[in-house]
Image 1 (tube, rainbow, N blue to C red):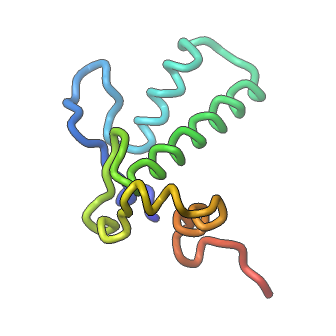
Image 2 (cartoon, rainbow, N blue to C red):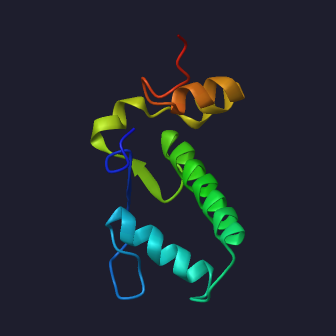
Length: 108
């Protein structure tokens, strides 16, 4: 999935206290809020980034079955499942379903 077309924010109005819709500016805004605009050790920043990525993955997962604050873009709308179908999938099946084609492990 492309970072610009995988999911879109739904129903949120822009304002001075909300992040930009530019991906780089959005994550920059989130990070600044997380660190309260103070210098932090690099290890702490890495941990915060890891947590943010986990949250984003969870948002994508929820969008796959129509829950949460995000929806699939029209390009990926055909992949949406019902919550009941999603729940019946194993963890491995879910991970496979969320992995874009040609993005998994490659074998030589």
